[in-house]
Structures are given as structure tokens and as C-alpha cells.
Length: 85
Ligand SMILES: [Zn+2]
Image 1: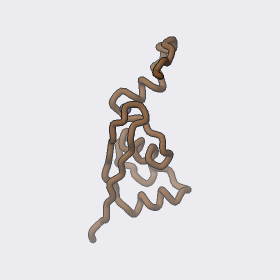
Image 2 (image 1 turned 120 degrees about the horizontal axis):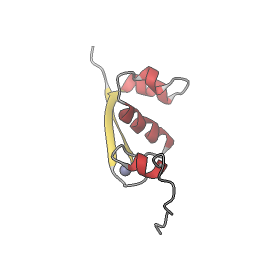
Image 3 (image 1 turned 90 degrees about the horizontal axis):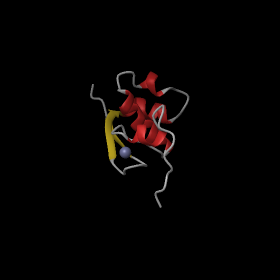
């Protein structure tokens, strides 16, 4: 039986890069409906791919190309002021 898939993409709030992943439609819809964890619905997706889905749903996403670390900070790099106006 054929499985329907959907392309889900999210845009990084930091660098505007758009990252997408292809997932099966049925579990994706189920997850969007709520009440299930993304890792239970898509156990085979990588953490980065799950972030795309989560970011898309939240409307806030950070890509896996350095922005996650850049925005949320490493462990010892807390002292640079954000001055991007
Ligand atoms: Zn980014």
C-alpha cells in the first residue's frame, strides 16, 4: 500500500535558511492533532529533522547549521552583547 508523504519545511529565525524534511502524512497529521510526542510518531527521524517539524508547528525554528548554538549559546560564551539593529 502506498504511503502518502508530505514535505515539511521551516525557516530559521536566525539566518533565514529554509530546511525541509519529508515525512509520512498520516503520523504527521496525528502529531499535529496533539497528544503524541514527535519521537513516538517519528522514531526514525534524526533530532535535526524533528526540530524542523517542531519549529514548523511552533512558528519558531533554529536551523542545525550553527544557529542553534549561536542563538542559545554554548556553555561558556555568555558575554557578547547582542547589537544587531
Ligand atoms: Zn540558521
